[in-house]
Length: 331
Image (cartoon, rainbow, N blue to C red):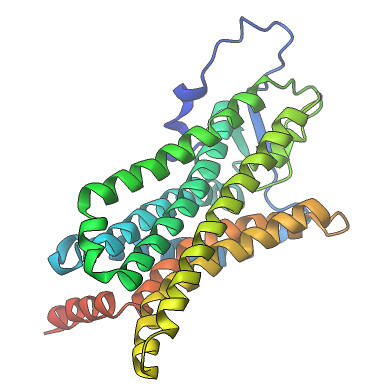
């Protein structure tokens, strides 16, 4: 009997379109996820670090949300954006891990066609949303350092809410065509996906049709989102560095730069694995398939685990609140 995690089934109705309008459309009822091809014998062992990553991501992000919610002193733009990042990380990791572990542990490889499209949509849209949140956090650091007297008025609570809503809508709208394009292709070859989840390129390659529209749109969105977001982050930090180097003392420069340290680490943890995975996907044709699959999982799962750790270690306010919570419970 097919087992599909709840987070993959909530969106079934979103893509439950009638097939009666297209008589030549071959719509497989299910896809088969192979897991990590070539490493099937090691699936149980591979599941251990992935399960640990998921557990750390869940615990860390929920702790961040709890601390910010219960501490009024942390109710500010930086921490609101951090909460948005935590929620995004939770959705991303939960969209992938439960089904992956069901493949590794219970050999539950079937996934409903609509659930596959829903999973694809959640992964792509929340990746775009996370990239947008990192831009918003860079803007917050720019205002806080370059124009601190106007920080509270520039990034008031309504403005923060509008920025967050804009990032969510951008992710929803830009990625919305993907599942509909994928759904219109005929799949007359095979329904076997050599992957642990419904990765966009892996699914599209199964279609026996001209998929250039889907491929070109995917590349356009990737270049548009990553190019635009990295540009705005670079501009923000160029202005931040100018402001820092204009400070009179070394201690002031280090202290001010330290407020950006955690955000810079999170940016690197998000974009570098994405860039490496994209390059290996496009140009690493001689690389083993299992390496591609492992990289595709790592670049989506490692940032949700690292982000709360980075902010917990490098952000003094969060670290102090966390220590207080544990010391109070200990006493």
